[in-house]
Length: 361
Image 1: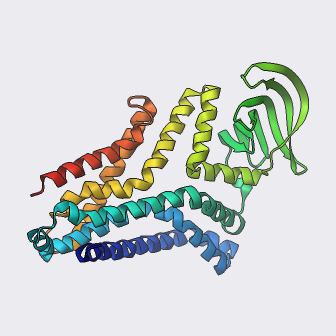
Image 2: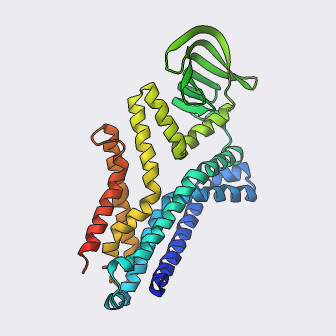
Image 3: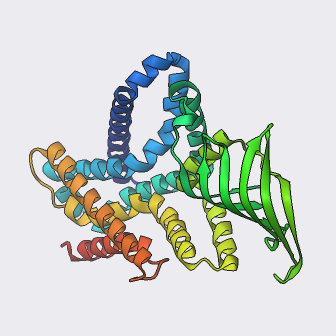
């Protein structure tokens, strides 16, 4: 790596980690004050609080890291421009692409780090955070509201319940699908309700259908009661729902998409396809934001680089996430293809960035 590359990369990396640390600290402060009454009421031990906030770092990283890298890149290039260092580099024969390459590579490294955290760390850290919150900060399961259209998986069973009452410990109007080791549906159970009693789940008025590997029904029976092999208790189900909706890894989403194709639920399938592609695109927002901002960052020459970088960073971040939200809404409504909708903002910033870099003289 050239000396100029190391110099640019060092400034950008230091700026990124500094801004990231500020954002994380601000989040800790805001969250502490918003939960202060619950913390004081439950007398949460300091060590438990430390574990709680440590577990939240991957989630905070997911949301603030793109803004941190955006602001740090703007500031780094703004400082280089203000001191005429970029002019000196260009005069020495350094091209715009060569000048930008260390920053682009850094954004890719952070993007892959974000992807790793999303797929391997985030769901486990959030489980610990929610468990600490439930046990030590907000303890009342009975205050949880009625959950409608409650869906989850447990082992090789997939559950669809019209309602879930944590207080009554009951799932109502439940459809259960059982898979074999190849992902084929081999059993369907339709239950009036499933109630948690004596440390087990018991279903009432069960219609059970058995299928062969081709999906043809081969047997059917009706049972007054049946014990369901569901390992989680009501509290764990509530925790599973709150965690899995947002933090499911890609492999679980892919499995669910495959299942929905068999069931034939087109609306839910479209939603899962959008979520799958959104989880693919989100970690790489670092890369797409930097590509899109580079032509503008290379032109910042104002004296107050810090304030300019902060303002421009938030503006570009807002534009990126506005386009992303708007295109996802279009995908959900069927106006554009579901798999394409999460990629509209990345493609827009990629196009703007490459075009802008090509036009810089």
